[in-house]
Length: 245
Image (cartoon, rainbow, N blue to C red; front, side, top):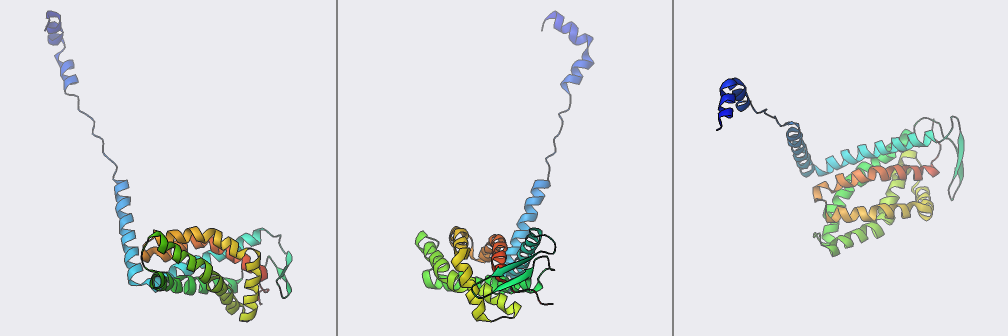
């Protein structure tokens, strides 16, 4: 060390010591992301357990509530699109009916979608996706098996069972016959119902049968069908009878 450096060290020892022993600030990592991740794992584990132990009850509850919410949202949107007190004429292949659009929410229509969602889309489709289709075409997730399941679902079950069931449940709620319900279904199917269904559900069902675990299939379908039921509720409402007082 040079003489000048020694003199500077002796003249300012405290300043050098302070600089040498300055504490390094400690940065505490936030534990919030870790806590959120742990809570998410707990919730997913609990949900997985419920879906495995009570598949039909959980399917009815989840899909039924979802169907009710979707129909209420569809009715709200329809009311906003029409002026207060407006009346419209809706026609099908059989007759034309005048309906007051701004009438109170139609509870019978919501009941129809609760039954359709809980019984058919929930309980029946759980058996269909996880029992019947695997027995018919196999349980694998290879491309051939997945495409076979999608073909059966879209080309056979959808036009002859899935969509007619929605109209039959609605007929039950409104109190008209099955023949009229099926005629209304055929009228909507010829217009745009089947085209809209296939455009959405063909790729979705490829994911359902190819990627999603069996116990989560109904929950996954329920999440997607929330938006589909808004469309379906509006389509089937084109031929609704007027609400009964």
